[in-house]
Image 1 (tube, one colour):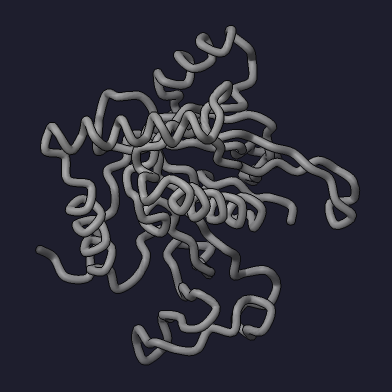
Image 2 (tube, helix red, strand yellow):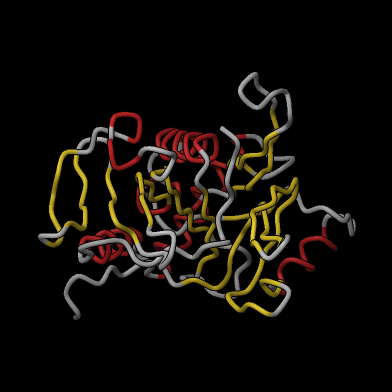
Length: 265
């Protein structure tokens, strides 16, 4: 195995709540109030939609805007499904220059890659001007076509990262560590604050499926867990393999610009 190469969940497509629009020769992010599920292929007009995008729109009554997506997560450990850290990228190459967790960071310097203290963006000289942002990646399953494949949602928004981290942790606790078996749903929520000048901002939440109570979702998770055990499916081994794969990394891979949602606050 190549050393220093993180082994991350296989990606089938992307989930976004924003897009990139070219204006006066500049490519600028635009916030949207709906989900778009795309493939990993770009055309002249942007990312090509994944077939699941249209399929889910039809299931929801053919509405123009997709605001919820039925999902499951791959792993029972929350930190394997949602990975988040402070990240500072080179704006020219899209490669990470510094990645930290608020305590320690890995940073490229003139002397090479070093481990240094991470004071968070508010207390870091290198992060002045908003160059360093939280960067979260959530992997989820949509449909049953590929049991180990996933769609990825990338975000630099505190609201989405904070909400998703809390939900994953809470659902793991109340389900008795059956997070990977819970029938869940990504939901788009909006809110206005003083900092957003009363304009709506949108963030992603994770709930149990619409029309299902938490108790019913946990009962379904228990049934799914038992069925998987009977078939020989080993969730503990899967979580262990995923954790080992992530530990192989020395540094994060290239940022896919234009793929993650930027929230106002």
